Image (cartoon, rainbow, N blue to C red):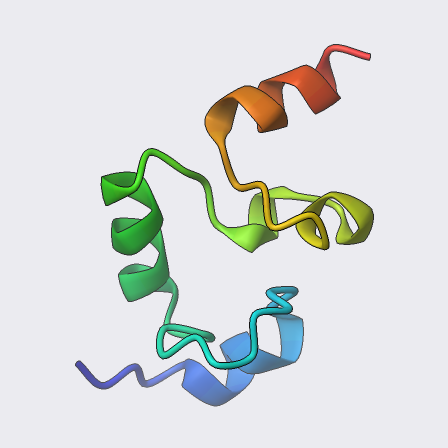
Length: 65
């Protein structure tokens, strides 16, 4: 699926998993992580994203502090 905003999205995408085929294609990224029971990198801070823990429970635990 082509994304007409791919180049714009890549400028703001904080995903550090470079071989990801969905990087910058937000629609595909959201659907993929939703199927996996996760959230995409853009929900996390730079430090949190670097852990590659994209679980919803990790996201919630980091917000409870």
